[in-house]
Image 1 (cartoon, rainbow, N blue to C red):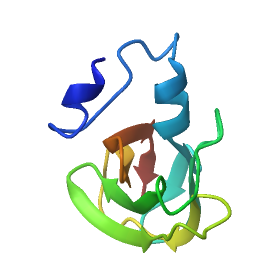
Image 2 (tube, one colour):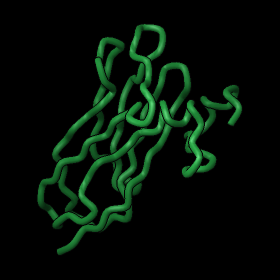
Image 3 (cartoon, rainbow, N blue to C red):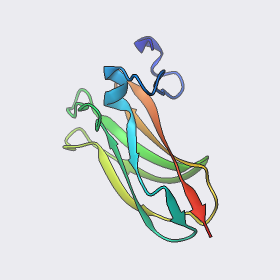
Length: 123
């Protein structure tokens, strides 16, 4: 992946089984149950830099983490350069069926990255 293209579109690992250092630093890792009950609250944690530490300093930091259920926006966590760890934990509920949770993060130097996690909503 050429760094000159990082601000065009959304970045994803080229080969999820063989991540580069850049991908490890920027991939949002989602922790959530595999199955949730429709309408019931559950906890979701998204961490950037879990696979390899991401810098958090005024010149290089994660600006935000957005969480989507398929194409539906659920929540945003705004972060600053003084955040010790670019991580957000939220309680969410899904009143409708979805295939996956998506977490988008924006690095001020390396653009927007997406992480995905399958999830099933049962009645």
